[in-house]
Length: 323
Ligand code: GFB
Image 1 (cartoon, rainbow, N blue to C red):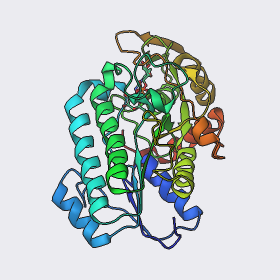
Image 2: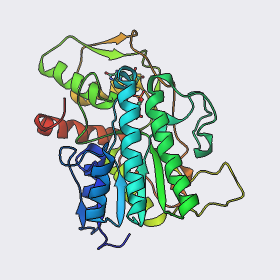
Image 3: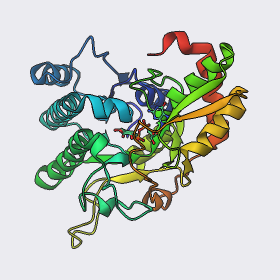
């Protein structure tokens, strides 16, 4: 990416988008544009195309998405598939029509088959049934990856995509019903300590494994890939080779272990109540990030340090976050 190139960060106000804006500025990219969803509705094709025709960005980070935890995905399946399909197809097609030089599409590692071998390799995509609790979202994100690779093959575009692990960090969504596990549990523990509650209810059995990556590491990986990784560079003879790239941390923990870390960091000493009426979801989804690691990137934020930083950020800024 050229430092004076115009960079559009779609979803610049969200947890990942705002981390990418911070990282871009830190690395000397200053020509950054963004639009709040109230200013630009990316589910509307005409509005999206008008924006691209007016701004003509050189580079695009497509972080805008309808996201949520296991309960939200399981409760609003139609919202998750239609909104993500609309946004990604509008942005990717408008990027093509306006000659965007390079685009990064963000998927998620929850789109792998539920029973895929661990650690997850990019070529395992679409090789088996998906996790039912978030299948609509996963289908939309799989379509986004295919869109990028199809435009690259047909038009020679340079649209790359990545599959991050479970992200956490400042600016997350702390809604207890619809949020992801990390922010939801962090808030539950903070409020239990503040209210001197005797117990915290945690969903599921606690046996599911999750790989957590701090959003600042994710932003660093995305900028790194936009600077160093191009589409159409794979050996063509392998029809199963995928251009998409896993962005993981390299280690996973059980929800039970996460609960122990959160109790320690927040100072909660009460009882943990397991609500087994709530689903565990995918039993495990640790990524093989060797494709990215072999390019020379590594995550820098250890899990406990990242959770402690996120806890302190939450105490200071929770009045600004969705909850
Ligand atoms: O982040 P999460 O909601 O979604 O994590 P996924 C769910 C796991 O955490 C399940 C347990 O094993 C839950 O039983 N859990 C325990 C909780 N307590 C809680 C709680 O209070 N809130 C939540 N939310 N979970 C998502 C996909 O899957 O991964 C999304 O549905 C997205 O599409 C995201 O891709 C990264 O990790 O199961």
